[in-house]
Length: 450
Image (cartoon, rainbow, N blue to C red; front, top):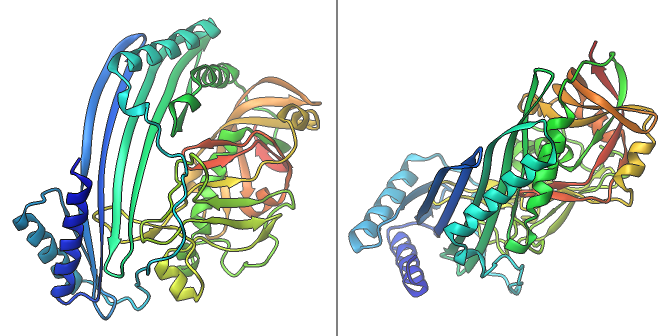
C-alpha cells in the first residue's frame, strides 16, 4: 500500500488536472486490499493463496452532466496524465445526464464504527490451517451420515480506501474481514445431499466455527431422503438464512433507481401498506461492525439509518445522488462505485428488524408447514409484478413439531402477498454479509407437491 500522504497527493493532482482540462466536477477513489485464503477438501489442503488488488479511479463530469471514468494502478506522472486523458475522452463520448451531481462537504463527525480488528493482519498460515481443520473435525464428528467435507475454507483480509472530490470532500475508510465456510456431502440409504454454511465478520472474535459446522450439518442431514408432500396451503418457517435470501431479492426493488426505471413492484406505492404490521425493514450504513458500514458512501454522502418499510408501510427508497436529485429528495448515502464505474444505488446493511419471538415458539404455532432450508430459483422472481415460482426443500412441520425431510416441491405466489402474510418475526437476527434477517413465519403459501 502507498503511504497515506502520497495517496492524498496523487488524488489532489488528478482532481486539479481534471478541472484544469475543463471538467465541471471530478472525484477520485483509491482502493487497496489484501486477501488471504485457504481451503481444504476432505482434510487435505486444496488451495492456499494471497492476493493484493487496488488502484485509483478518476470520474469527471462536464457542464451538461456527461461522465467519464478511467482508472489505473500506476502512480508516476505519465500514468496519472493518461488517466486524466482517458477520463476526459470517455466523458466526451457519453450522453448528457442532468441529474448527475457531486456532494459538498458536510459537518457530520466521523464515527468509530469498529470496522477494524488489529488481529486480522497478523493471522498466520498455520492459524488458517488450524481453523479449516477444526471445521472439518467438527463437521465430520457431528453425524455419521456426513461422508465428505468437500470444502472447509477460511479467508481474511484488510482494505483501505480514500474518496475525494473537487468540492472539498475527503474521507478515509479502513476495514478488516474474516470469512469461514463449509460444504458437505451426506448420504443415507443411497440418497445423497450437498449443502453448507458460512459467515463473514469484521472481527476475528465474532467468528463461531462450531456454529458454522452445526448449521451445515443440520441443513444437509435434515433434507436427506426428502420426499414431496401433498399440494395445498402451508405455513412457511424461514430461518435467518432463508429469510435473508428473500430480503436480498426484495432489496433491488427498494432502489430508487429501479423504481424510476419502472423495474420495481413498489413503484407508486410510497406510503401504502405493502407488508404485515410486524415487518420493519431498515438499511443502516452506520451499524457497528456491519459488513456494509461506512461513515460516507462512495459519493461522499454520509451514511445513515433509513427505515424503508415501517410496520408494513412503505416509507422510502434507497438513493444515490442522481436518483435523489431526480426525485427532489435528500440522498440516503447509498451511492457506491468501483474505481472504474459510475455510481449506482446499493444497500449498506439491509435487514428486517428482529421481533420478540423465539424460533421454537414460532414453530409451535404451525399446524401444517414447511421449514424451508433452501429456495431454488430466486433469480427468476419478477421484480415488476412480484410473481414467483420457486423450488424448495426442507422439513415438514405438523402440529408444532418438526418432522421428516421434504424435497421436490414448489412454492408460488406474489411477493406482496408473501410479505403481507408474515405472522411472526423472530428474535434471532443474523447477518449474511450485508443482508440480515431473523426467522419468519409466513401464513398460507401455495405449495405444489405430490
